[in-house]
Length: 451
Image 1 (tube, rainbow, N blue to C red):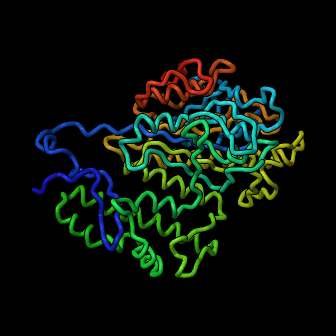
Image 2: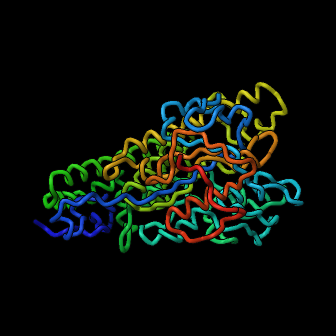
Image 3: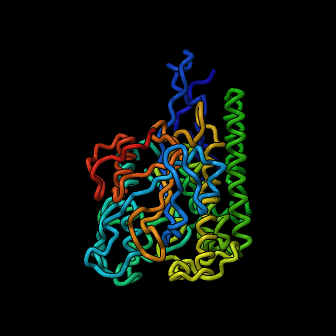
């Protein structure tokens, strides 16, 4: 029997290096000889941001605990009800003006994961705080190839005035490594794909990439010989896992290719190294594709910390697939106009549907003795409560997953009014082993995450 594989084994070929999933052959020798329990799954954290708040009066469910009744906007959660914790009463006090005047959208994004009040400037002297994802990444990021991953669907400027004197950097980022260093997100699925998979001492050489892309070849084609060699050394179950993994990678490639073709993102051979200079026009497919990339990143333990801005704060994106042709931001300033409110409802229900779809996908992916949903915590929400009022209390917050036992879902947790949202973040940071005693304006951890 061959010796165990190193956890960081790669498939290689023609300048390409492809990461492998966890295989039984990677189990240490000392464990091969004993009928030990499977290696426990690591805790993963994902933070999903939605812009412009919600139609708040139809968001918060009736009832608390297990007896909650889905609100009109949360009805799409019904199929995954037992996997979601709805939290009400959380507050981002530092997203309020505090004497700085207009700029709620910029403050919302900057405050969402930091709990900090951003310094009002449109210059280079931006300042917010360290975000919870980076607190967690500082604790566990050294265990994975990517300490953290930042995703989005809209590009954004990192300077200039985007909201009443606030820098565009505030509206376009939720991940902050330090108080003056936001981490921009990647919006292009292909670039995310290649950043995740083409890892190794040199990644994929430019020549190999040009050759592969010019042929419209798959990464799998380039590493097939190495994969076949490895398969001959693996047991039956590992061969099945390897085949499933390679098929999944190829499926992701095909989905990315279809979107590129639909959006006519084609370039000449001499610039193929910069393929995908645009983002998919189909927002629903874009988000689902990013979610699939998140899932496989967690499954392969490429990273344990991900942030995903479904859109930048203040986004005025239209949603034609919902028959919503007016911009989202404009619609939220409805001033009671029923047709605009109805359009906002459609957007909010669609957001709940997409979240429910992600939760279902996580529940379908095996991870050790359980599923990815068992070892993951997904926080979904905004730092604006009602899009029309621009308030920052009673925020829309959903938490999915069990996080290896730190979350007891299937409930509505009604926190005491004006509880800092950062109390939730501090609880999640402590669960990963962080010793920080404060995040943003936290006053302690959040009770009630487990029943």
